[in-house]
Amino acid sequence: MTSVVFVHGTGVRAKSYEKSFARVVSGLGRVRAEIRVARCLWGEEHGASLGLDGVSIPVRTKHRGVGADELLDEDDPLAVWALLEVDPLAELREFAEAAKARRGQGARAGFAPGRQDPWQAVADTARGLSLEAVTDGGGSLDALVSDLAPHLGTAGGRVAQEISRTLGGTPPADGIEAIAARAVYALAVQRAEGPHGDDEPLAVDGADRDTVVGALTGQFGGTGRGGFAARAAKGVAVRALNSYLSPLSSLAHTFRGGITKGSVPASGDILRYQVRGAGVRAAIREAVRDAVASGGGPVVLLAHSLGGIACVDLLAEPDPPAGVDLLVTVGSQAPFLYELDALTALRRGEPLPTGFPRWINVYDEQDLLGFVGEKVFPDRVTDLRVNTRQPFPRAHTSYFAHQRLYELLAPELPK
Image (cartoon, rainbow, N blue to C red; front, side, top):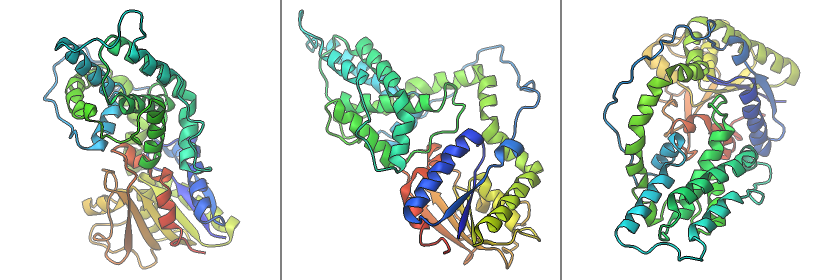
């Protein structure tokens, strides 16, 4: 039986690993049911932590100004999602400002005395949203719905509150349906990832995101399937971003301690691996040995991000683990580190060892932490491009929610 050993990347600990592992099991199970998936969780023992509780972080004592703003491309849907990652209500607030401006220019109010404010109906819809009918029969969409459903009511309530507060009394306007749906979705994702972003970002395929947003848009009475075609929404992201970048930059300084501590698992694992990477490689070696003993067949290393670097380093050592038939790196920096001469076991200019297994490297062009390897190691690496339809950094964490990944890998996995 072929075994796939799933090696996680930077910042992952037990809780988030189990969620990613379940996605891999489900995804591979739909294309190669006979494949056995085995764990390799190294983050708990060999990941980074602040051993002195962050006493090295300076305390900010004085507020300072911030630099110039940047703009997003209003025609780029990923730019809008990048904005909503920062502030889920940004679009909605800008929409409300535009509605107030129309009222100031002489437009009629949205309701007459004794008649219900039309925006109240939109707010009521936000409070009653549901994802019960959204399903794909046990795939990645169902996993996303399961993650979001417990938080949908709270997110819808917050959007309803914002609609009532900022739009009450303004004239009706087109385009609110998709904007409100995106706000509810973005808030639900934010809550699902923990009150302080403590959990690993949700792995979400862009197609699944658009399906969920489309379903929410439909409940608001809109017809768009999560798209950005409504004219009333044009330019909203660009205008809103100007209002948020500078304050957020200032807040980043003000709350540096919390931000730094929160980023330690992700950034700290990378730094720690550079000088303490032997423990990670030993954990992968042990997982391979167990997989060979349990499955009795070829072993595939499926490794994300930093896990891919560790696997390349391990397999390039003079005494690599026996039984690895295929290496699959996903969103990995290994080719980039080779070009920098920063790999542990392989110097720049050296070829891959003769016994190095077949290597498939998966990347998404939106993932700024994913690199290609075919030109770095000609005839030794095969690059496979996927499109999760997510902006960075979510593009880096969404590979295993993308069913196309498993469809591409299915014929490549040994039997």
